[in-house]
Image 1: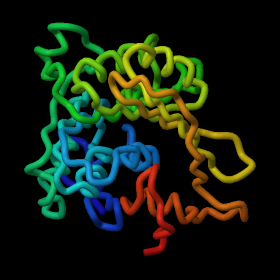
Image 2: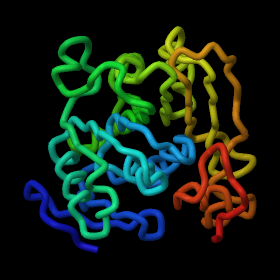
Image 3: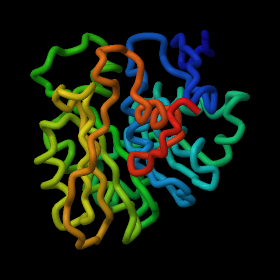
Amino acid sequence: MDGPLVMGVETTVDAFHRGGFYLVQPAEGAHRSGVDATVLAAAVPDGFAGMLADLGAGAGAAAFSVLDRCPQARAVLYETSPLMAACARAGLALDGNGHLKDRATVVEADVALDGRAREEAGLPRDHFDWVIANPPFNDPKDRATPKAEKAGAHVMQADLFARWIKTACAIARPGGGLSVIARPKSVVEILEAMRGRYGAIVVLPVHPRPGKSAIRIVVTGIKGSRKQMEFASPLFLHDEDGGTKFSARAHAITNGRATLERFDGCGEA
């Protein structure tokens, strides 16, 4: 449905988690959240009750997903775009998001900053229990979007993963988690950036359906852990029949009823 004007931009109000929460998003010309955000949110463990940082939060879909599923969690949403940050704040003000608004804060900041500049921008050291990140991961050589707002959310800059993961490690407490969603081709860059910072790394591929190549990866690690890396069972968004309906596992994940680790066949509940 139509949403409020945000910085003079028309928006929509979109339901997530079957009406568990709502998002205010630009109607056009900017990134609109969907499956990626809810899959990333599902990397945060069930029962999470700590402080979450969402890097590149956009309108807030991933952080809101975690807060809706984990009622004891709190979050800081970091977003460099004034428009998207304003949309996230407008989302928190919606009547249907009353259970979120007192547990979330939106901060306009460039998460690629380093050292003192990063801290002065509102990214404190050793503070968060889990960090999630949905960076722009389209290659600059890919077909470019003519919309500047959308391009900023989609197009990957040089050393992006190295800079974002350095920030994630700096702001996380020892033993804190990091989860990043990206294209599969970025796995080497992500793992290199995590080297020496994170262990217990799990790489989970996301496939459109069985028999098709992965289109996303979710990489999770624990700050300071020495545990070996492993690959998780893949997530198939759809079944083999070629239909557009989500698989039971994907349905549960995108509706906040399961995590990437835990699924009890509750997709149609």
